[in-house]
Length: 221
Image (tube, one colour):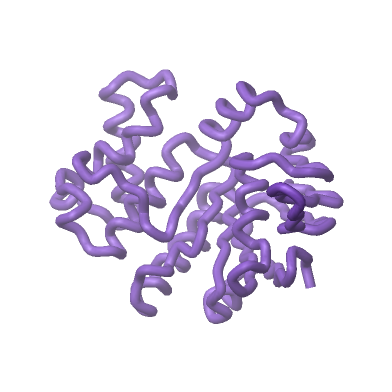
């Protein structure tokens, strides 16, 4: 369960103050696919950064599994982020000189698994997202955008996270491929018991979510 209460984020630059997120409260149960929708500048990406512990709130709390992660120390946040949160980005963020398999193995370096076990898990995840043996040894540049995003999702799942945060995950894909990616994220939310939260400006994607949050001027509307 994710429980957010009175969450706010204010950025200060000199005398200028920008309230990017304003007094947001929401709850999300485990294993659902949720969407945060809003125009550019609405605060949705800032909210995602707060949920992913990439930034700290100015006020409010973020409880995950009954623990307020907003109060964690910097060192504790690093390990929490590594073990409990998976990220999927619009631009895939794959390492270009590593193969598909090596990209998925990368987060497992600190998992305690030996190389053989890392490889087995990475191969299983790639197969789960539809990347077969024939493409696992390819570099990202030799794969389509949809295939690269599937690899990005497999990498996000590597450490069995409680939450996957996806920032415009279909932004660089055609509509048909984008639908396949969203269908995959929805399926994984159930099979992996992972809460998936996608930020999008695309209402057609949002309509497929089990829970939709609309943002405007830093607030839920």
